[in-house]
Length: 87
Image (cartoon, rainbow, N blue to C red):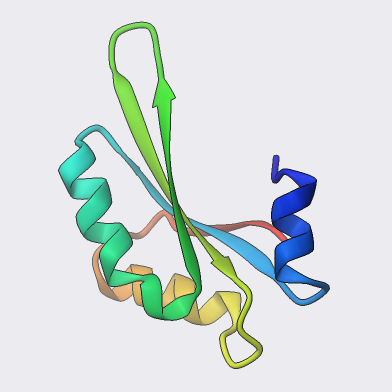
């Protein structure tokens, strides 16, 4: 879930798109760098029993960017599992 402070920062017009989850931090950071033009990129460590995964999400808070555009860019980059987490 998105913390209230984070939602307040983005105002009323926002969406969060999950670009992907990666087993390698370098891959997650490389993907994150490619999506900064769409909004604020969040990379989160997600520890599991045997390793740490890294999720990459984009907070789409620009009026000129639609979540579907971010998903399309992810698909074009070979990341077929991007989806809207929340609006």
